[in-house]
Length: 433
Image 1 (cartoon, helix red, strand yellow):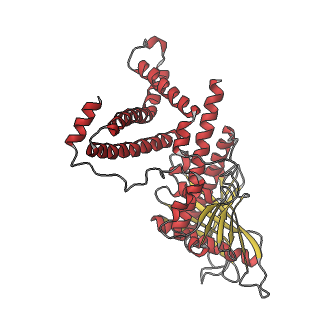
Image 2 (image 1 turned 90 degrees about the horizontal axis):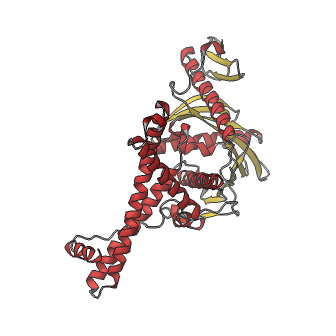
Image 3 (image 1 turned 90 degrees about the vertical axis):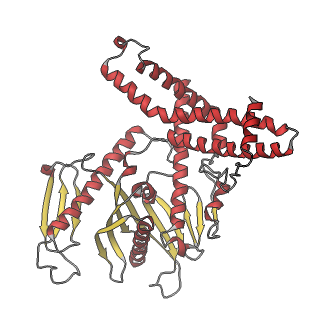
């Protein structure tokens, strides 16, 4: 086999191209101390601060674990058993039609994972054969073998990452659009000014990703801040990339309204509500109480003259949604209904999640309104995410809602993915014991 490999390398001698233009190790499941590579383009400082309750593991470390190897073997065994049933090796009397359909579905779901596992095994065998050529007396062949080996290593790393991705189940809401709500918290006018800045940051973030951003409603403060605002965001992976922004955001700085130069601490709250499709979630019209009233506040001649404002109450839950953003009552009703639907759908998902009883949530948390997730410290020019202990310097660039915010969300997703893998392996270990 090794000689055939040698002959193949001789034939390809002039065609072999090094694959070092890709970083072979920095795929996704990187250790915390390697997080700095995320910011090398703009030379900004990025580091992990506070000690983590759960250490991030690399791809290699995860695949070196016995629990993962046992789980993959179990998946292969389950797949082969299901395939045997589907192929007709088991009599139909042993399986009812509904059971057969379940087995067929399982085969379909496991097929991509099993294919990747088998490709990984083939690559590992290939690299073993290639390494035998590194001992050859011909220096040119050794060089070719080394290049081939590097290519195999990269392929192995890619396949391992693909397998880990396939192990992570997709959340139902990850493909949804969303309704964003921001609300000023403790801190008076300064909290409202900060709320306005955060709302603007997310509007820029939507533009950065090419998503649509439609303001559903907003209530301004006396000096230009926001008491409350909501928007509908639509686009590929919009909810998946925004879901970890939910919670309490804290700002520490000297406010514009402060005359003595003292630093204040204020807060605001972000809610990220997945927007369901009409097929996945419906509301019974009989459960709704719809009221109209005259719009209040600034807005021109239509204010206090027409019944354009709409208030919708969901009677079974008491959830309320209001909108007076447009002059058209119909448009306001449509926007209020969109917000109400998102609120009810979010409640439904939270109920289902609590039934599954996720024990961990130590890094990413619950994505709830009451959880303090991030501090924006203007004096120290830093943004710190408390869930993963990650600090980004250059707060002005972060508030632009572009690459630094995107990188923060990428790191949060990495931690969440690893938590899911760890939980999966722990569950498998408990079932096997």
